[in-house]
Image (tube, rainbow, N blue to C red; front, side, top):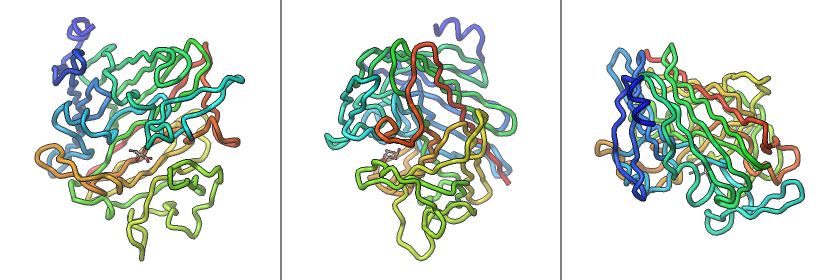
Length: 343
Ligand code: FUC
């Protein structure tokens, strides 16, 4: 596969480690004003650099070596699946059959696809050129407790206008549930904290969650609360200690296309996220423990924030949430774009 890829590519593909004897590759994409390094480990964005008048600068957190991704369960830059965020008690029923998923968060809930979810698997390279790479992962029937063999695709491509496009899709051979999400920690300017980044999320309601991160089922208006990001404002709520942000924001219906899901700004760099997804999880990174990051940086609480377009957490157990069932013959699809501007 790699040989075929070499014939059509000018993008460097290098071995950067191994997991259980399987080589992990890094693919360095370049196009326009973006440079992106993708790891086959977890379909991870290891590095994303934007070129501007002040030179190139990093806009996501990342580790320098594969070993560090293995060591730190931060889901840094990866694609999480089969089911992003949490499934309460790891349990759900589908077509009258009850399933028990791995309970990998404090032995209680299922988080981000389990102990060895998609973020901790080596994806195959399906194709690569200078500006794009296709990654493929086959998840066997029963993996982490999920029914059906699921074949997932992730295509990263650099588009015109400083845009990184991410196309996710999946098919199954038996009824199952799917909710994939991209999980980069953004920091647009390399400052220690993202609390002074400015954020806008065009959502009138959000999903309150229990302390364990399970949505209560309520769609709560953001109006008059620290969760109101309808107007661009600092991440840190006014007159408040850092507010814990780890909730899904409910976006307007997308009618199948992509629409703006968030805008983030800091010191002359801006990023808009456009997506097909019904919700966007905003996680402020406040629970991150100190870890050494790339190039001698020390990552700690609020070093980066996550904005993760996805379906609603715990959907299989919540009436009134989006349906996450995937059946044979259907194709799950998500398109998400990170669109950058530099001044
Ligand atoms: C986000 C959060 C979770 C978790 C994870 C590492 O997706 O919603 O709570 O902390 O990241």
